[in-house]
Image (cartoon, rainbow, N blue to C red):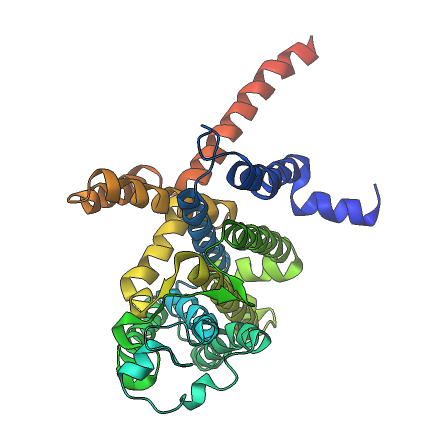
Amino acid sequence: MGPISSAYSRLYGAKGWAALGAAAVVLFLVFPLLNLVAPASSPFHVSAYWVTLIGKIMCYAIVAVAMDLIWGYAGILSLGHGLFFALGGYAFGMYLMRQIGADGQYRVNMPDFMVFLDWKEFPWQWWNSDQFWWAMLLVVLVPGLLAFVFGYFAFRSRVKGVYFSIITQALTYAAMLLFFRNATGFGGNNGFTDFKRILGIPITTPEARMALFAITAAVLIGTLLLGRFIVTSKFGRVLAAIRDAEQRVMFCGYNTAHYKLFVWTLSAVLCGIAGALYVPQVGIINPSEMSPANSIEIAIWVAVGGRGTLVGAIVGAGIVNGAKSFLTQAFPEVWLYFLGLLFILVTLFLPQGVVGVLGQIRDKLRVRKLARTQPAKAL
């Protein structure tokens, strides 16, 4: 086995790569065919509703993997990751609003909310926002720089545990209040909506939606591979040691603040990218995405799927958001009770999450199989 094959084997193993390949075939081949080729009258047709729903859940799954990197492997519980997600969405949302051009309600080359509020020109933060490359740069830089500056002072001051969680929650709440103000130039409580085009391409066409779906799937798979590469490396082993016994790691000569700052900033950037993919698919971004409740829910996704597994984060995001979409339609008046019951049951009976329980079952089956085969070998 060569060095490259050996690295791939360590990254996921044969079964892991097979599962990842199967998922890629479904997302990149099966779904596009069933959506674009299969006629709407066919029972195999995948409607635009399902494309949008699954695309949205994949965006949430990227955020969940980003959260698992810092919580599951570094022991840093953030209750403010919704802020980084929303900042990425707003950064790309500005570009989408500029792409509307003069097709808005007031027929002028300026977003409707600015015309309504009697803005005469774009504020400074909208500079160059009509350029796609600049929007992509902002998607990465805005959440990344904020996370870096915040993390630098927090980790340097050795703020951790519940205190760090409370501060991140306060940070996202303050940002939400700021973005609710019309004077900030981000649409106030209504935010951004009514998007028309991306790179001059109509955003509502089936082909454009499927392209966004495929890009989101590619980013999700790339995020999972990147996360797996990090946690299986020496860097990841140091992170796990910091999570379990930070004082001992510092005694061994490691600067733990540098490790935590890197993974914290990377996690924020991944959330910003997820937010940028979320906005054109869902069609809206507003300050409610920054609410502390949303950030708490991100942690719940990871807990439900299985903290410290990466794949569990994706599973948890799918289960919780899939259940939410179903329950809001089937039981619109009491769906919150069902969702609360789900969280309670997971906390009581699945403390290691769904993937953790499946791993325990797999290990027990292996032990039983080994117990059956060993006597036969002895004979």
